[in-house]
Image (tube, rainbow, N blue to C red; front, side, top):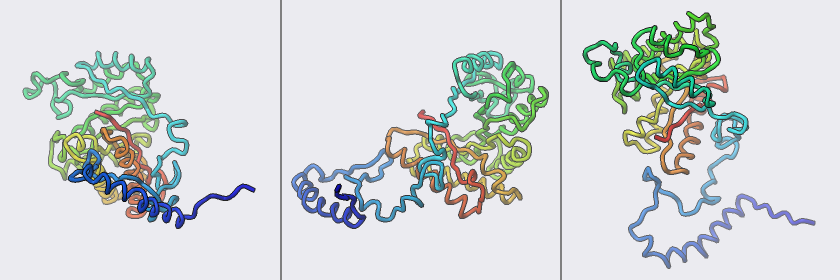
Length: 337
């Protein structure tokens, strides 16, 4: 008969305590000079334990705190079979000087197997200036595509089936204008708005925190954003109305924990504004998306994403009383630089 060697939690803790007493502690005393004045931390200056063992899991419920992929609180991911069954959407950020050149690039990327489009705009477009404005002189088309009119949008997406490809637009302060142009283009082509899929970044709070590209103060900026959330909820059910962004905050110097804190706080502010507007949280929360930085510390980044999903799920279910499991899911994309 095979002996059942499975340990109880108590015996595992006892084994760890015995190991620390008989092996770890004597070894650390012998190597005291190597530890003197040294700290072992992550990139974000968070202390890293020498060894993780059963004592680190005493307060962890394996189902309530960790669970399974695709199951609340989504610590391990929002898809039950993860990337094996649900691949990430691959997009190459692209925006040349003119709509015509960018359209050629978009078509090339789609031919190479890109699963969606990601639009880079120039600074005049990002700041809401027409191409012929005096302040736009010398900046038109320098760091992305310029879109001033609906005609520009028509050229940009000429020959691209808007109901078959999802489009991400990295634009914030004038996002509502660019989205209106995109919808107008779809209307011209007779495409059902309910078939349009994509994302506008439109995270204005992070602009004031990190990127500094705003047009009007915080309160009216958030009001405009909420107008767009309300419109998307009613007219564009497949559209992500905000990409709540931690990336810029991290690149501005935040630690992983600070990036997480600011980003989730911004997300909750948008949820509260939507509820204050009279929207049902389960009508708009499933279409909120996130955008995080992936930094150099591999395990710290894993912990950050796991914590983000768990915190968001709990806050959405408990604080905001969301009933739809999709409202609890933190869906994100990430960039490394």
